[in-house]
Figure 1: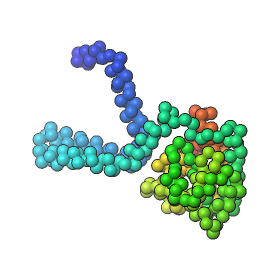
Figure 2: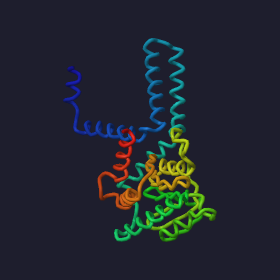
Figure 3: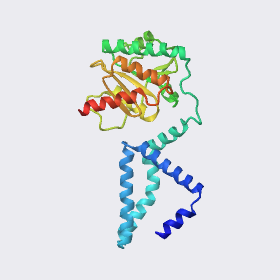
Figure 4: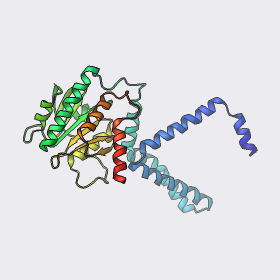
Length: 278
């Protein structure tokens, strides 16, 4: 007890700041890997670490030697295994407000027009049961994805979006990338999600939409060609059966991110999850 009292009284303000920074960093790291494969890998590493210490205490020398060598080589293996999470973490740091400005540079008077055009196109495609995948770029640049498709660089309109996804046309099979108020490219190829827990009824469009949302902060709109249902993928999460009113609210939040503290998309997803639980 005396040791802890002396330690507390000898601590300076900078020590408290140091501890707070480390605690905040670990909290952010946990939130970053929560509900991902990395979470399970971290648990496995902790088990190995504890097993190493236990084998040292009870003098199991052979087991200890094997575990220590495994942990040594594991440092290099971690860089390979955690490559997607490390990239995601660095992108998260790069997207901080200290380094970036507003990610969507559209005048306020144009936002409602852009949202109306996207909603009208999505609603029309849904009614006709025409499959579609629209990706809206935010802070993370998608130039490498744009290069896989055909550049368009046309002002966004419902007619343009609908025509792109008409079946048997050259660009209908792939994703459309939207940057600000411009359709940058169509027929783009997206990385597929590695999430093995997805429903088997979800096709390539939904998996591609999730994949790009896992690797960037882009938001993806999906229209199912089987059912006409509208879905939204954001931050590695998929929400299905979205109505037009909710879609409009989500898009307004995308183009006006600072107007509300909690995104309308998250609000809807929470209420949706609550309904499913009931």
